[in-house]
Length: 413
Image (cartoon, rainbow, N blue to C red):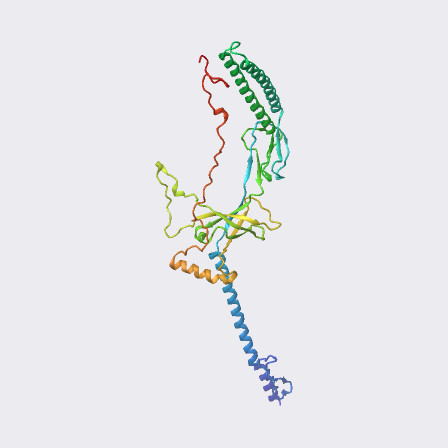
């Protein structure tokens, strides 16, 4: 019995410990009294069926196919947007600015506007001291009245001499009085013109806005001296905004006058819609500048690297979304939407564009689409300055020397 117990202890010391898990079939238990009964067997676990394995495999394949299709569609859209469609991030909002300069000189006594204020055409911007011009206007009026009285006297004297008989007067005397009347008439006309000029100068002391728009960068103050012809205030014409898109020359073949265009300003998601109005016909060429000794200044380039020039395209604005302000100088991303009627819209037109681009690579540039007015169109008819049909002024009429008005026979004949 002692030998049996010692053998059991030796077995317990040499056997490894077996973990009890759900998947372990045999479990050995040894007690102090001897070996346990026979090993216990766990119930078998049922594996996944063949149908479930097929569904899982098909789902993985469908997911892979869907991801591939999304990637292809994304690549096509990116190709269409970045390679085929004419677009540029180099765009800017432009506007016409009226640089207002006074037509008379003087000290500014009143400024009627403030910076960034909206004004209408004809509104007073500032006022120049009118005192000197009022004095000039009154003096011109008095001189004109004096010339009018002198003219009346000279004309009456000339008329009396014309009515006298040849015994009471001579042709020479008639001619002298007629000449005096003519000189008085000329002096009266000159005084009238001086009075009109004085009135105009007085009105010009009120400087008016020439357009509807916004006063910008106002630095004018009361007490400043305004000089004739020197700009001192600027007004942005609110009706003259447009967008310039600077497109690479490689995309100019797909841009035509009249094409619909969209522009997105940096910081605003809503697009501004418009259409291509004009295409610039010339840009500066650095090689055209003369260098030392008047020789051509040709810049060296790398043969295998050529940078595309950018051509300004003017886009007229048709609609501005609410909440999008037009500020001259803002950066815009300009996209040209082709108005070609036979081109499918959306993704349906991408394969045709890709085939067209590949044909251009292998067979050269394609001819412009029908009805396209591109930059190579003929020159617009030049405007002719209208020639006035009026006859020359009366001052250009020549009188026969030696004869006064109303005389047909020279003295002594």
